[in-house]
Length: 101
Length: 154
Image (cartoon, rainbow over all chains, first blue to last red; front, side, top):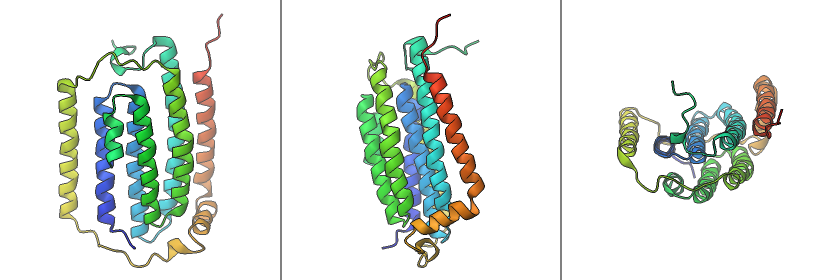
């Protein structure tokens, strides 16, 4: 059963927007990282959908690459969160003013 | 979809993480529907397995008491409005363009059950990006270890 690509694009758009709203309104760094994961997943969904649409494997290959890069990004991001928590005892972005002039 | 909304809206970060697993799994289902079984398997293994374990570890290592309560405030309203505006703009662009409804039978994607085709593409045509990604993962691993290491005294 083929899936119409327009529907997949709409799902991907909604996921991206949910992720963006999450990045904007949440104060918890961990939840912000999760929202970034949602955004990357939305992009990945687009890659796969167009790979299906254009009958081309490149989209799937780069989808796998995107997942690998997201894994690395999460590892580094969570390590930064741990370092931040160790130094500042907080994970809420409103309380971090290190770079304030 | 609903799971993704709940990721953002849950007050408790652990609930967010579990809804995130649910949304990753449903996305893997979407990949299967789009005839990308290999990507679906990688999604389940890497995201629902590895990344969620990382998230849960860090959630348990840090202190999660929310000092702000459930107030949203002006900042949240503005952000939500901005998000809805982006949805509206992109939907209007979609409405203007025309996407062909159903593609013809995807023949390239199906040689040898998708896994063989993706493997051929990665190791034949995209070997250099593949190696670069592996190097990137190595660098990220070292960086994570260095960042999360306890600070030595003296």
